[in-house]
View 1: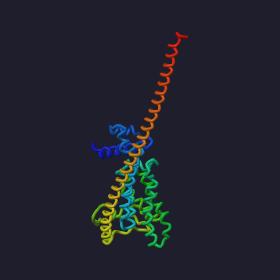
View 2: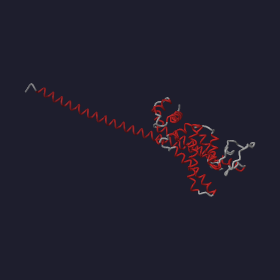
View 3: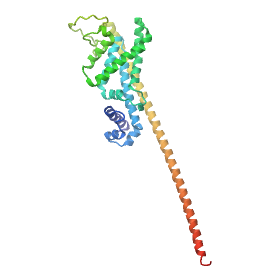
Length: 314
């Protein structure tokens, strides 16, 4: 197994253990034993438990943030909201261990922030989207940050709840989330669904009409027009370019992390060298003291011998 493969193995094993037991409940000994390696191998790659935990948390944060950022690149505001909600639920469904790590303890030793900081970062992106919408609708854009926190907090807390219950399905949960956020309590749709623009299908296929109860609704989600479909196609191209930028950024971050690890290892080696030199100096001092004691004992023995030889002539 190459060094890179071993490092990846340790990250995956640690991810599972941290998800099950948390940071404090997981030890280096357990990580090493599960990977069937010695503890020094883990220290060599990460410098300690804090190091491997930081890598695991950073990976999960970057993965979730990339999915949300991609979702928010859609054209229509409703589609952005739907895709963002689905992105979080998809992450929870596909990366349950990672989400548990983020929301349970996010130990300060990770150095990469907490789930709350991740939510704030997502909220800042939503804030820009809302500010544009507020200006277009004549609302005060200064209120956008507050509304962004409300929206993101609602979705995040729902995600934490859904992590364990998993019912109903993620698309239905997303539809109800968007229903509340888009229509408000006074205009709730009794049977909300995700729009065609958000569903993963290339072309909207006409469906037979399904009878729906007549309910007065102040806000109705717009249907996807041909113009919007063309805009969505352009948006997909932009999303692909953005995804490539994100990939490049992840590569740069991985390289930075590797440099930091090398610097940390170099620092530890220097400290070990200083400690070795200190111990050698202490040992040298002990040897010098022992030599002086032996010399003193020899002189005393010599004097005693001379005194002993002079006794008969007295």
